[in-house]
Length: 386
Image 1 (tube, rainbow, N blue to C red):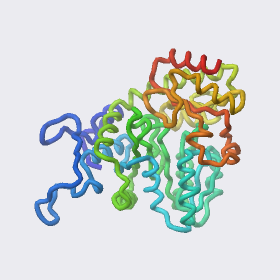
Image 2 (cartoon, rainbow, N blue to C red):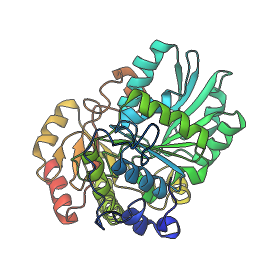
Image 3 (tube, rainbow, N blue to C red):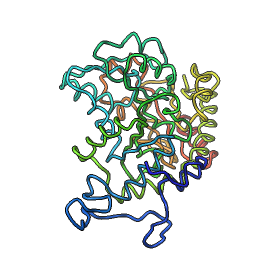
Image 4 (tube, one colour):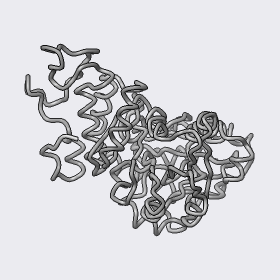
């Protein structure tokens, strides 16, 4: 990461300025879209830092530097999707290696572990997210990676990052934390001992539901060079326009996250008092089993709320059709509110018996609470659940 004037700035200021110096040629405040596939070289081995756009692009460099700064990391890498970023991390492994992962996690991650990495004889063991001792019990001589989501998707359990980091490093194992749900505004895993932080930048980082992307941040140079090699060799890199859109979205990350959380708190309180709601999952509620950990580990509780309502699968169809402000769709983290049915959408790749054993039932709905006026969101929930 390049040192810049942003290194001493507060978060909201870094989100606007980190990695984004005015263009030296024109003075443009906004980072230009370098829409090019290659770069002129004055001679053999003589260039201005860029040779071919898969390997590097100045717009992408600005995004990588900005995300690294927001996570208090030294190195950032941008990818074409969150799953491309995950694949780059998994490129660190070899046949016969072993992963320990929290059991409540994004269905696409489970799919990579279960249907792709298993083909290369890389096995994954799953443990309850908030049971710290279980991570150490699951470690084998060939374990190379511990994989965490916190808060988890979709049940919003928390993992004690610092405690698991101590376990991982005692056994010389890398710790990867998917920080997508929190964003670096509310949580910075590198500060708590993680080796790699993962983001689906599609979500809160971009925040406008118009780009697919991913990112990794780390402090270790050797780790960075290994993953950067894969980034170039495998080529799953974002285009410059997608990168530019993501940079634009980051500029409002701080103000968006504050509103997401304010609205999510109100939604969670509303749902806890609703007669049709059986259980609410939100770490900002004092009734949440990981509430105290959330207060220690995060600077806010985020914009995701999940809940189970009384009924059966046929009731889900009726409820989701009645929403007018919330949109029934996959994804999360945009300015608009979304409602998702994990069992049939984001986590449909997980076999039903495994989903249900982990507590992900057919009547669970996941809300990505947007930044609309809260009165409209509450009225929409009321009429949909009526």
